[in-house]
Image (tube, rainbow, N blue to C red; front, side):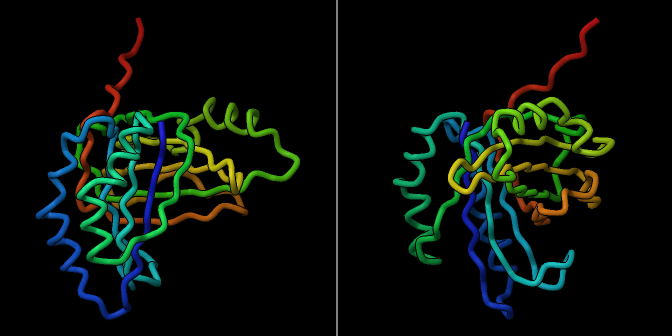
Length: 201
């Protein structure tokens, strides 16, 4: 799995209704995209939820690297680049995408937590620890739609991305070195989101 995000920061006075309309018009185009687990159409709006900027920042989780590559060379990304300029695209190696108890509901908010790995940390141990306790890392989880973990092996940074079906931006306080970014979700395409695990008897 691959995680991918680009961030388009817009002027302070930009009318964000143009982004809302863009997503309303085009969001459905990725609802059935092969190889895509999910795409969250994310925004930050200056003065809302503590955001200092206006930003359009969709985040993708791909099951296959070739599908991500095809998208970046395809008409959708070409159109976006023509409209806003070609943005730098960040990507991480995905390790888990897990549906939460509220996966059947529409997510309203999202959190991206980026935690740098200490220089003396073993990446395998950090990942194993994070994978072993996803529920604790996402608080009580009652409003959790889904969560993903991924690793940037260039900057050695752990990504935890969570979608929430309420306005709480759930989860406990992040580690002191972590950077937490909060978003509003305008649309979610989830053509290949894994099914929730059924409880065992």
